[in-house]
Length: 143
Image 1 (spheres, one colour):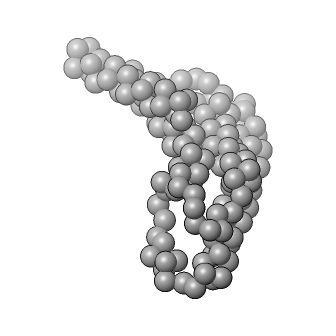
Image 2: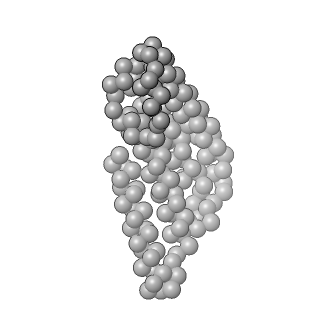
Image 3: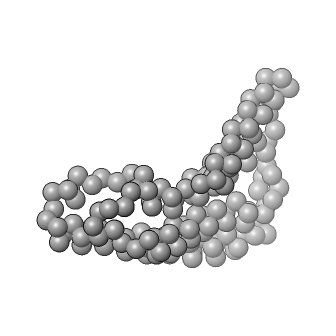
C-alpha cells in the first residue's frame, strides 16, 4: 500500500506538472501522458492484494447471505480457488509477455516496454501469494 500510495502521489505531481506546463509554456511534455498512464495502472495493480484481503473489491454478495451454510462455504471455497487460479495464471502469462517485448521502446519515455508491463505480473503475483497464504474464508470472518 505504501508503494501504491507513493505512485499515486507521483502521478498527481506529474499531472500537475503537465497542467502547469500547458498553461505556462503552451504545451505539456509528450512523456507526461504516458508516465501518468503507467503510474495509475501500476497503482491499481499493486493494490489488488490488499483490496482482496480487506474485502474492499467489487463483489456482489447478496445471494451469498441467502444460502445455507454448506453452500455458502462451497461458494467461498470456489471464489478462493478462482482468485488463486486466475491470479497465478495471469501472473505467469504476463511475466512471459513482459519479457517478450523487451526490445520494443515506449513512444514518450523511450524505455523498454518490459518496465511498465512488469506491473501486471507483480500485481497479480502479489494477489496470488496473498490468497495462497491467507487461505479460503470459509466462515466469512475476514475483512
